[in-house]
View 1 (cartoon, rainbow, N blue to C red):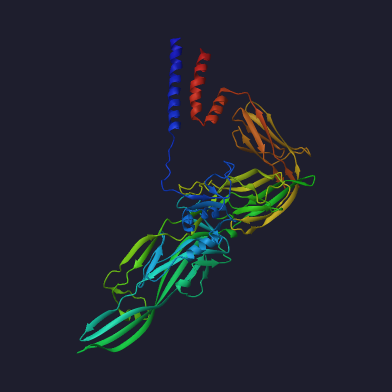
View 2 (cartoon, rainbow, N blue to C red; view 1 turned 180 degrees about the horizontal axis):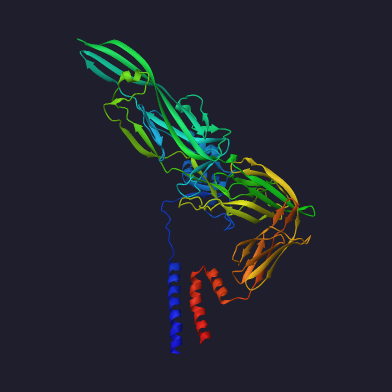
Length: 610
């Protein structure tokens, strides 16, 4: 008895120790502290499916935020992070009820500019020329495109702009101008003074996507220049480069006076004026994809039973990579009161916490080589007699929100635009494959989530009484949709034990009695996860558990005008010690099963042996 007790105590003690350690780790957990100054406002019109209603921190629109007593439009825009449907953002901003696109564009246009100051952002690439200082052009976003950070760092799918064929790029050009003070030299009783003044400055900007170029067309004063570049009919296929250039032209007047010394002072003897034109170019680049050019073949198959619509099977065929596939946003039903909404949303966030303003000091003194300025090249360097002094300070940036494409749900869903209709249409079976290995990274302070997106190849819509009429991509452009009609045939799926380890699967058309060949069946409890029926509608699989479950998701045979309806079946075997252990392992994700096995099975197994 003592030997048996000792044998029992050892595994019991070992199991209890492991159980206590696990319990301690679960109780302790991982604690994450919320940053003390993280006060974001989250705005969305999409209900949280896990809660069933809008959480208390979600507001239905921007107006309710802006109408609050203690918050201004500027403050609200600086703390705003929210998601919305890609192609139909419903939000309005400010007293003028501007759309979100108008609001972003106006904030960019209102960025002030003068010749003595320039404002740049953390990722602006500044450069300095002879007179032009802190010059840059920075891509801040797009009017009707989005940015994505899907993919691993340093890969081609990270930080892409997804653009439609026709759109607008929001870019900020800025610079300041240093004009030298008058300089005078005295040689043999003759004083020569040179004074400089800027007659005018203008900027010409151009946009290049792939091999196509769009330009502002002419030089205009920067005060009146648009900070948005519009393009049309972009034809780039696959990932390419977007380049924005800004060429700043300065027309400089050089005034030269000569004087001689007299008893009463200096007397001017000669005065001349010349003009010269100096040019300075800055650029910014970004990887882009014109998604409207990408491939996507969409076909809806209407499944009827006695001429009555019963379900819709939507096939979406195209490349599986982010840069090669056109991304659809939603499909409208015939009544226009429902839509099939894809996984996509757009996450908008305030891109920059601050910007930097640099002010050039007006007392800069330079010694110029006038022959260099009046020579044909016009752009020779100046000889500086003292350093240029610049004061810098942090300033609020323009409220140009960054728009990022994210995945907001695991699969497409039915949404109601109007009040609930009589149609109880639901999304049934969805076949998906991974699009990327990573979800979009969001800021730690954002109380939203982005799932890893998957491409939907086949979507089955059940309990539906109306077809789809149009399909739209993430930019709101229509995607061609082909429609076919077939008749539904019920299918019999039967599982039969062949021996202790093997199961026969058979698919049969119950209307005709014919076997359903070359069809894929999903499996659970078998060594393989999927099997395909042969010409006799049969597949043989090897079990890996005490129960084998087979699911047939349905299939369209367009050549015969038939849709084979979904079906499923299960077969059970007598449990074994190993299958009991596998069940515990599955239920507890492994660790607790090991403990339970040690605590409960080993002692009784020992007793049975005694």
